[in-house]
Amino acid sequence: MLSLRPLSALVTVIILTACAEPAPLPSAIEQLADEYLEAMMEEDALMGTYYAIEGSRHDRLPDNSLAGLAAWQQKEDAWLSALEGIPAPTEIGSRDWVTYGLLKEQLQSSVGTRLCRDELWAASTTTSWHTWIPFVFDIQPLETPDLRAQALTRFAAMDTYIDNEIDNLREGLRLGYSAPRVTAEAVPSQVRSLIGPDSIFLGPALRTDDTAFAEAVEQIYTEQIAPALSRFADFIETEYLPQARETLAVSGNPNGEACYPALVRGFVTVGVPAEEIHTVGLEQVAKIRNEIQVTLNEHFGGGDVSEFLRRVNEDPAFTFDTEEAVLKYSTDALDAVKAAMPKAFGVLPKADVLVKPYPEFAESGSGEYHSSSEDGSRPGIFYIAVTDPTGRSRSNQLATLHHETFPGHHLQGAIALELGDQQHPLARYLWNSGYGEGWALYSERLADELGLYPTPLDRIGLYSDQIARASRLVMDSGLHTLGWTRQQAVDYMMANSGWAPVDIQNEIDRYISWPGQATSYMLGMLEIRRLRTLAEDSLGDNFDLRGFHDRVVGMGSVTLPMLEESIEVWIAEQQSGS
Image (cartoon, rainbow, N blue to C red):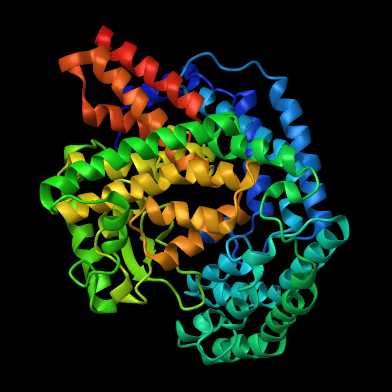
């Protein structure tokens, strides 16, 4: 069609086009981050599926062979060397500053924790592959013939992945590495629960009307995956457990004494000595016990804190009658917290979040969040334990929900995923426990500020969750550096938490098999709380809670030192009126 645009307009377009500045070349940091991200998505072949990243393939599993890991580590060394050759950006909060800090932490943390050789002893009910990788088949995209073909290719790789895990654990035993026996004893039964007509691996066959695809899924499962599951369970039962270490502390593995501080540094993003971790934990436990005592005196007739924390899990007045009641309590609370979020945040995620019971095969903990999609179309999922309802207190249901959904993991993680071009894509996907778990624990207290614990029992649950995280500092350092026994840790948590006994047993095994991670919650929260107090004291009546929170969650999972720098600059900006 002939354009009727005036000649003067055409001339203007030509002149503007000729004079336009060429697009700036990406910085050296951007280029390196692009290269790393492309390789990371190739290495972590599930990433595109977990986050529903546009253009991703869904036909592979990660290369979990020891040769594959060694090749990846060589690449990490090269990237770290290249990054250290680039001057660190000085404009705090800028895109390059965020990208540089996130990438440097990712690489340094990976290099620093290699001495632990995690890949050689991931055989516990917390760390074994079977506790996480089956979930990918619950979200495997199947909408087109090509996607279903990709699913079959990934499905067919599962037996090799399982056999690689056997090889890795066998090599670990040869070199003196193993999971503590107590944390691996339940693995065979858990893995065998994946075998049968209700297996999660058969889930894709039920989510499509494609008969040929469903038959292919069942054939691969029957001929390849089910036998591999049996091989793994038999290996753990007959070969691994007889050789697994009896000692609980990570020092029972080679380089174990150096491993613990390396893991703490990796999880928290700052190095904290074990002695300080233990001391801070004891101080926080004492402080929160006082908070519980005040509520106990005001609303429950007083009494001993530890005795009451046990009572809330046993008295029928405080527990559930049915599994349906457990689920409804959380879904109702989710509606309430969603409605309150605009009071504390200027920016909220597009993605929704759902509450579901744990799958039958999974280790039922106190709660577990699985991410939403990058575009916000697929909701996040918060899995909760609903079994044994009469032994499950109503008290801590709300605190756990706020930790995992709003304002906790879902809000922070979904906002990061939905950052778009504000930050380099690395900011959407990289994550660290010091910031991430610290934010989620801070969120439990924030929910209290917003009036989301309507009963004294709910507030007891908040304090119970908080004191449990403080107890983790005491127990984790105790188990791995002070010679604590498992029973000693169980008794300590039974005295300082309102969690159900079954959850406490599972939690203790988690601390034993995953050293250092448990310290990140309270240490991270205390730092975020310190920074908020700094902002409140510095800004007085000009402190903006929504602006503070938007700043904290607006750059992805930054390190705690990066967060400190960012908030200090934010305070200065508020003071100057910029």
